[in-house]
Every structure is written in structure tokens, then in C-alpha cells.
Image 1 (cartoon, one colour):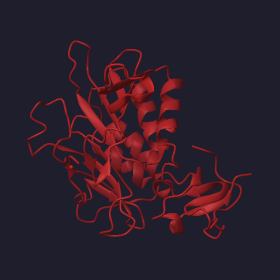
Image 2: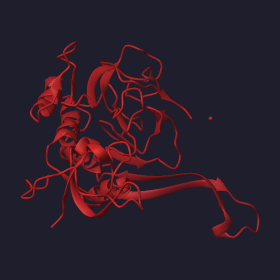
Image 3: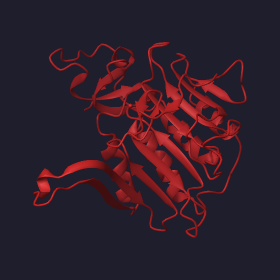
Amino acid sequence: MSPPYRVRRPVDPLTLEVPLSPDIPLDPSTPGRVPAICWVGPRHLAGDDGRLYDTVADTLTAMGWTSLTMVRGLREPQEAPEDRQVVRSTVLHLSPDTLRWAQWVLADEPFLLGDLPIAWHVSAHADTSSPLAQWSAYFTPDIPGEAIADFLVALDARRHPATPFGGTELVLEAVTGHGWLLDIDQPHTGAMDATFTTHLSYGTVPPLIQDGDPQALTRDELDGWQAWAEPVLGGGCLWAASFSSGVPHDLVAAFARSVSTTAPVLRRVLPESTRDRLLRAPAI
């Protein structure tokens, strides 16, 4: 199955002792909010709790990555700092060996993925002699932050972040081990959850996905992993992720394993499009 989108520029906690239930009432005065923090599942429909930056940034800080805030804007003579007009702002997190980095680019919205703005852009290269990234991965809002964090933990643990390892079976085994189904038409390159809501597919990457190959922006034959959640068929994506051709399969498998896990996550804020599909249990 091909992703229902193209890229374009814009104009584990332990098993619960309390069973999850879809019947815990939500506060009608605050749509999408749980009256208190709750365990919710499945993870792939649980959203990012409105904390996507914090969840990922906390993980990067714990691993010793350095963060830099880059601000570009317009400044008039005699203008006070607080009145400066910010045109572009990104937060760059850099690993200690400088071989891998993650950028929070949501404020910039450099391009869209599935009609959703890119929030995190992760890249790596083989050595520091070249400033060019060997591969890139892109994540939109409402991807569970835990899944991006697990992807980055796996990336940080790699001695050589750009060296290929394993094949596509690593990714498929990661999700089928959690009960996902192989795509009946493309069993070697695609899978989906049991409700046919969230999909994982290996095929031609959308345009503008950056890779180590300088022709990656224009070539159509490069393959990579795409993942997306579409709660209502034809109703747009809740989230989307795209991995360029050079992203090692074991790193994609780390993301896939995390996003497909049956382990619940703590949430205060639920996505409007999936709140009725989520099982909930109060956090005790």
C-alpha cells in the first residue's frame, strides 16, 4: 500500500494491573482532555500529549546531546530585543560525536508531510569530514513522542550511525510481533494494525526527502520506509513519518516496535480524531 500523501512545501511501562476501558468519561468542557492523567492505548493512536518537543528533548538531554537555538529574524535600528521579528527559529540537538543530530523545526514548517507540518527532522552522517547528511528521517506532530525517543535511543547506541544493517524483515518482524498484519498485496514491504488504521510501507519515498545521494530530491526510484495513521479513510492523517532510503532498517525497526507496542502510555490530552477509539484507565 502506498502512503496517502506526498511531501510538499506550504503557501515501555509495565503491563497495567487495571484493565483499559473506553468508557472513562471525558470532561465535555475541555474537548480532547482527560479529567486526569490516564493510561491509554493503542499507542499508535494516542497522539503526542501536546508534549512532542519536551518528550524527545528530555531524552536527548539525558543522552548528553547538546542543544542550540538558532533564531533568524529582522531587526530595526534602535529596536528593543523583545520587539525583534523572528522569521525563522529552530532548535538543534547535536550528539557528542557530532555524527547525528535532531532539529525541532515545527516553527519553520519547511514542508508538509501528509498535509501535516514536520516537527522533528533527524539526520546522521558517517564522518565529520562532510557536512552533508547520509540520511534523514521526518516526523510530524501527534506521533507518540515515545516512538521518536526510542528511535533516537537506538541511533545514539550505534557506533556507526550511517552503516546499513539488516533488511526490511527487521521492520516487519517488529510490528507483526505486536499483532500487526502483513499487507496481503505486499507482504514483504507493508504491514498495518488490526484495525487498518495505521500503516507501514517500504516503497518510493515522496519528493524532497533528503538522503546522502545528492539526486535524492529528484529521483523517483529511491525506496524508503513510510508510516502513517489515518483514523478515517480519506479523512486525512493523524500523523506521518518518512525515512529516507539511507536510514538503516534496524533504526526504523526501533521506531516501528515502539509505535506498535501494546504497552499503554500516559496521556492528559487525546487527539480529537481518535479519542473514541482509545482504551483508557486512570493512572493510580
